[in-house]
Amino acid sequence: MNYLKRLLTITGILFMMILAITHLPDAMAQEAKPGQNVNPGQNTQPGWMDWSETYCPDKPVRGGYLRLAWPLYIGVMNPNHMPVLDWMTMSQMYEKLILLDANYQPTIPWLARSWQAIDDTTMVMKLREGVVFHDGSPFNARSLKYQMDWIMDKDNAAWTRSWIEPLESVEVVDDYTVKWHFKRPWGSFLGTMASVPGFMISAKALEGDAALTKVKRIEREIVSARRKAADNKHIEKAHEAKKKLDELEKQLEAFAPIAKTAKPLDTNPVGSGPYMLESFSTDNHITLKRNPNWWFGPSIGMPDMPYFDGIKVSVIPDPSVRLANLKAGAIDSIILDAIQYRLVKDDPNFNVATFPINWLVFLTFNHAKGPCADIRVRQAISHAIDRKALVMGTQFGLGRTASCMYPDDHWAHNPDLQPVSYDPELSKKLLAEAGYANGLTLTGFTINLPEAQAFAKAIMAMLDKVGITWKPVFLSITGMIEPFRNLDFDVVGNLYPWIQEPDHIATLLYDPASPFNNGRSHNKKAIELILEGRETLDETKRTKIYFDLEKTLYSNYEDAWLWWPNAVLASSRNIRGYNLDMLLKYGEGYVFSHPQWFKDGRP
Image (cartoon, rainbow, N blue to C red; front, side, top):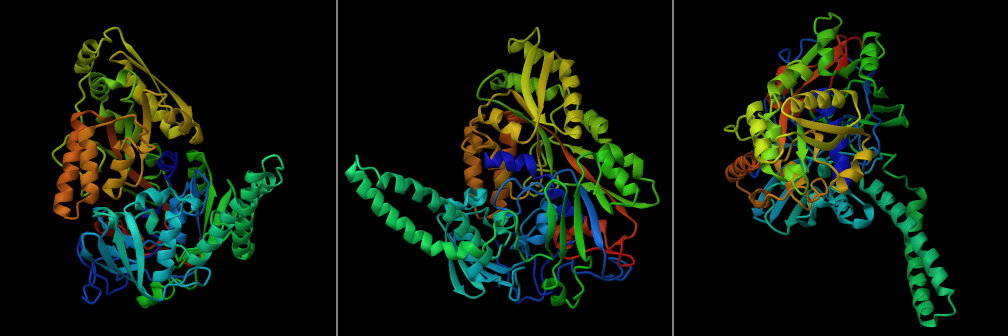
């Protein structure tokens, strides 16, 4: 259930987008639409390459540790393993091949300088030179190939392996050129490389991590083989076991020297980002220190980047305690709950910004069994929810009512769809037609966090008005896995953060083979469109496919999409270099190229 665990635990990704304490491409890079070629020889400077007074009138100052707070500990620190609970911190240590523009299209070169499609199943990619991982090893074509091979190796248990399934192989052309070979046309390739599989990791560290994994497996198999080889009652099986034992001991001899000096990536991250691991205390904090060899600043003549000496992220589960720490000056910047916005919006000690983010809050229906297998029940639930009142009541207006899964500023969003209308009388009529004139009781669950409880109670009250009793159980992240696997629910309160490549959310939610669907729905037309969108290379055609996909899901009331949230960021006025207009206009192009700083070089 790695998909389920991922989707329920990556809420930390929001910080990556909004704190802007990171990195991005050189001044010679050119933005392009997905699927088009990017030629680094064309000297077109993107709009986000602006460090003038228009961006910020203050000059950057080096120094100080940025102090943040997050409700959950980071978890594991290899992005290909689970659970990862804080993607902001992860994004400070690792960098992607490609970044996203303001419409979430993978158009911005980063560690990949350019890409060119040779044919429908071949892509040539030029890589950035002079990038060094935190362990001193180089980022180059061989390290990229090793990483993709590592992900594809089942022994390494990378949850991202399914995302790169269309990949046949990576060919090293020269030190900084790779040729990607696909099994079939792969329209979501660039979007995938702008997501987790595109986080580049030291090949040296990956080799050590793989050796550790293999040594542990081999040692277990050796114990079993020795036991079988000593079985005098089954001579033939014992003979085969001895042969197997010889092979295993040779394998152990090959991997043991590498494993001896290796460290597991889950607790020893090795990327190329602006910050590197300094220390951590599980469930308490993680502290990063400045990477003195980060390449981006020197590439544009600003060698002091990044400006903070480090970043400390404290684990504070209670939102009220996080806010109290901000007001006391113990924390420099936090994401607020919507309900807290009014408490700080006029406070002269803080800079407070609100802006749309590409998250989705929704209800997941079980189509496979139970009342929600009937479309009339799904319709009744959806029409019983007053989305505008929900956003006003639980988010204080800081959200946008949702019509389907892709946010309204996402390139794959169908603008012709409107949120399902609030019509409680229609809900009652539909329930009666479905055989529930005297009421209906539904089971389900959602995550056990204060924010989720408030949301669930509001939904329960709205459903109760039309005769539907929803009884959600509030569970931990791990506690949600088993009931979802067994389809032991009618309705689940859900959140999907960071909607980037449209194929990813579509596949995870609506492909019956996905562990996050697990057979709970099976919309034949939607499945056909998902497959078509994944393999279509023409962006105009892909856009229409996703418009059609949303319309198909919408018409079938596949789920109840409620709202796309707005973020609330509150920061000390001592922090400089934050420009909301540039964030909204340029997306990751701005975020990763404009690290912030303290006014006087200290908190």
